[in-house]
Length: 311
Image 1 (cartoon, rainbow, N blue to C red):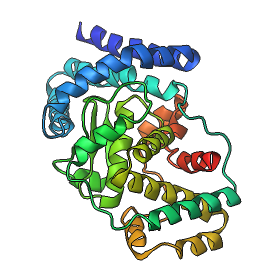
Image 2: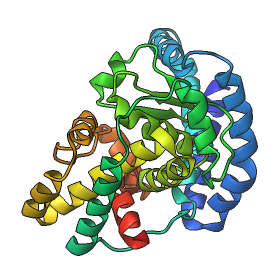
Image 3: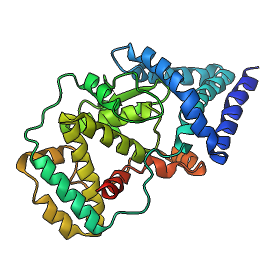
Image 4: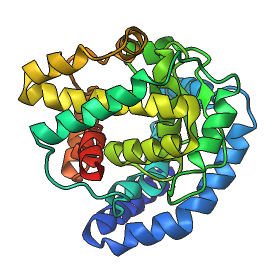
């Protein structure tokens, strides 16, 4: 009986994911009608806990999987199928939904130079950066400025044990099983406000990393203050990374225009490092590529193209 339940929990969600890929109207309907009430309900429950529920939950699931591997293969199959079903029903459809801010083509050198110079000028005028005292609450308020499928109902949380995030070079992470936005407290402070809102955009139903970046940028700029500064700092990072690949000399010239304080903040978010994406493991990458989703998990730089289109 457990095997039958496991097959249903794997088979039916898998069919649903395939249908989302084949019929574009389905994920749009699902993310508009089904995802919002579920996301709000679960995030309110998990949000009532002051620390990320995902951290102890992961340990419990891992321990249960090890135990069941030796005691009950049927139980192990059921556990893993439940993990898959939740992700397939309440996260995978978001990858196939229509983009909130369509971006086409690649920005050219002139546009990137123009946007980068504008951002540098605005950042230089900001002054000294400091984290808001009520960062989580303000991030939730800033997220309300974005137009996303589901209204964000819970504030982001700082990881209780940030070592695992440091190990994976993660500044932030959205956990679809608990509907939590988790932020690395050890990450560079100037980048934290934008990162927090970015993860909340995922909680609002935006899976594509590039679209989450764009939605977070719009929300942070509208909200203002430290969030506006943090968003523009990240926007500059992506714009300069794109420019560096085209014209390293122009990148060097623009970097020289940064004020000392902005230069220090830019370094805090690894702005001078060469761009790269976090590897997700061969199994995960294979699954994403089969389902046409891999490019959406590595599209952070779409923010630069959006800024060039909007300039």
